[in-house]
Length: 233
Image (tube, rainbow, N blue to C red; front, top):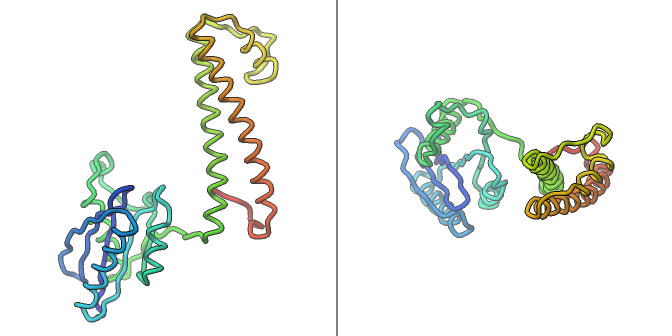
């Protein structure tokens, strides 16, 4: 059997906790900084270990996260096989969901990867988008984020109105129509509440304008040939 260096990685913003082993041997822990220098030190260590084991194959895996695909890209550039795994498809104990242990998470990924290498078990890989798709997604994420912030701000306005016992008249209409906004803007309130309300309304107006700009950009993007199948987040 060809020797394989197996590296189960638990990736965080500042650190990479790794469980590393050769074939069926017991793994060791190696933690490095999640920086270019830190990742290069890890790759150098893995290459040196591969040389000691008859130019063994090196394979790395970690869970998908908001960190994106930087680690994957660096692995590919270094000639190291890398897999990004779907967290929702990795079985975890109930207690593990409540508490975070870097080494335990790295060990779990290591075991999944070793079962794949030695027994041919399937890995819950995610699809790795190309660089253009990743860049397009940034725009869509910004629009989704703007929508969430708008919803939160409007909820804050509603709570402020309730705290100050402002009751909407029946003829005002549904929330956030022109008549509803006009009623809110003309409300007589104490100074603190009035200042807070004005701040919320300015933020809402700004986000609504930003959303319109992003909508136009996304519409323009959707007409490009590489998005003939439609755009997803």
